[in-house]
Structure formats: structure tokens, C-alpha cells
Length: 373
Ligand code: GLN
Image 1 (tube, rainbow, N blue to C red):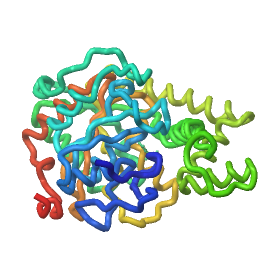
Image 2: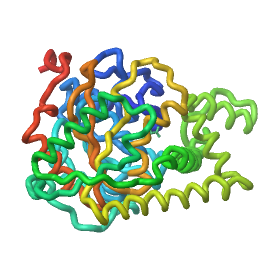
Image 3: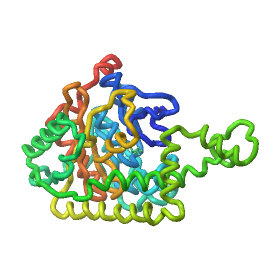
Image 4: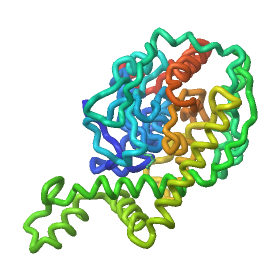
């Protein structure tokens, strides 16, 4: 089946869809997150046991967090992107969304691996994710808690408390919590919001109304054709990003913005690699808040700041998983994110699987889903 999402995967609420907003099954006045909001909503409403999503800056993990699901963003290159519409090609990665880590493992067994049709998919042996579900020993597992991540402006207290409780639970199961530094945190949003729009403006240039994409009615001349096809064919958020990206790539600004962002991107990756010298996984929330109200009308910058916990993972190409870990005072799901080193999908799924053997957050259903059973 086909589900709703933000136009061209740009957004965090699924409201920027051509087809209108999607409702969060946990509270019908809330968004399901985005951009893979429809995927998350159908699972949370019990209309489907699993779905796929693409994650360029959090679009699997954040909707999974908002809808109380498990969602895995694999290492860049683990899953083929053949057939996907490219958003930001150096960040895009597909992955599974489901109720449990176990279900995600079954999906990964089918999805992971090399595909000659996607030159970025790696020729690297694939784990048996299902067979490995119990293989990571929690006893002595070192979980890094980035100090900077828990001092972010706008982190809701309920989210902080639920995440801390989940970390305590993992500690009870044998893990060791280690405070770490990830010093580049402030650079995440500006870096991502230069690189992603730059790549998007290039990818979307094929929608010219001539060879590809929507074409306006009765163009007067070639300029009118381009102008109207691209302004009628793209929504406001997509146009905003094309403008930002084209600006960042234009002669005279390229070095100041795009090249600089690429250098900062490398520093962000190095920050993580340094962390993985002393810990096995890093554990931030998936999002600073629970699901927003539909129509909350966040400014673009407010919305972009909500991506603070997810986008660095894509900039570094790392795998990360969201696990449901409880509810806020409005009974909206809260998510814990675990970020692993390259190719550690088995480990991430195994940690969450064992957590899920000792908790029941992933088995809880929204009231509307009970009606669908
Ligand atoms: N919210 C982020 C954005 O708007 C991430 C989207 C994604 O992963 N597709 O770009």
C-alpha cells in the first residue's frame, strides 16, 4: 500500500503533503511526525504490521518516536535505494519501521544487502539480524550519554525523564552508563540545513517540466514553462529548500557555505568516531518533544531545530534505532534513540530486543488501534 508523507520527504510533521495532514493514532489532533508519517500512522493504527521509510535526517526515527514504534535507520549503504526519489543523496537511507526490534530484524533480513542498481549500496556481507537478536551482551555494554544533548533548549522534561528511566532500565540489565562529550552539537542543524537543501536543489533540477515532472498548462514561452511548472509543481517547503540550496551552491557562495558545511560534516563524524573509542553506543532522545499539534504552525527554523537529535547520524552515515520508552503527561509516546558504529545494526536491534523483553511499551496500543483489531 501507499501512504502519506511530507512532499519530497522534506518535513517533520507530514503536514507539507500535497494530500493534506495525517493524524497521529495516539491523539487525532497531533501529527504522526515526518517525513515518513503515513508509514508510522498505519502501524500505530494497526492497519499494517510494518512499513518502510526513508531517513535523510530522521524520517524513520522521529515518526517512530512520535507513534510509539521501533524504527531503524541503517548505515549508509546497507539498504538499496533503488526506486526511491532522491532527496539528499549523500544522506538518504531506507529502513524498517514496526512495533518491535524483532519485526525490524525480519525486515532487515529481506532489505539489507548489495544491489547493482544502487551504486552506494555496499558489497559487504549481511548479518542474520533475527538469529542475532540475543547475541549482544548487555552485561558490560558501554552506553555513552552525551552531556550536550541533555542541555538542548526545548528538550521537554517528560522526554528527558522517560529517556533517563529507560537508560536506568538498561543499567539494571547490566549496561554501564558513561558520560561523554559530543562537542559539535550546535553545528548539526546549520550543517544539515545547508547540505540537504544543496543536494535537493540539484536532485530536483530534473523537474523542469520539459523532460521530467509536472508541466504547467499552455506555457507562453520557455521561461514561463520553467517558472510556472516549478512554482505550481512544488509546495512552499520544497521551494524554500530549493532556494536555500541553489544559493549555497552558487558561484561566490559555494566555498563559504557548501564547502564549509562539508568540512564541519567531517568534524561531526570524527566526534562520533572518537566517542566510539570509549563506548559501544550513544543514547540521545530521538526528538526533543512528543508529537506536535496539527496546525501548530511552527516557523521553518523551529521545525528544523526539532531535528537536532537525528540529523548528525545521517551526516556521519551511522546506523541508529528508535525504541518506544513510555509516554508523556498527554499519553503521547516518547522515544529513546541508540546510535551505533558503522554496520552495527545487529547490535542495535539486539539491545532494543532485550530491552523489549523486559518492558511492554512496544506492545501498547493506541485506543483507535484497539478498535481496528
Ligand atoms: N525533518 C528532516 C527534514 O525535513 C528530515 C527529513 C527526512 O529524513 N526525510 O529534512
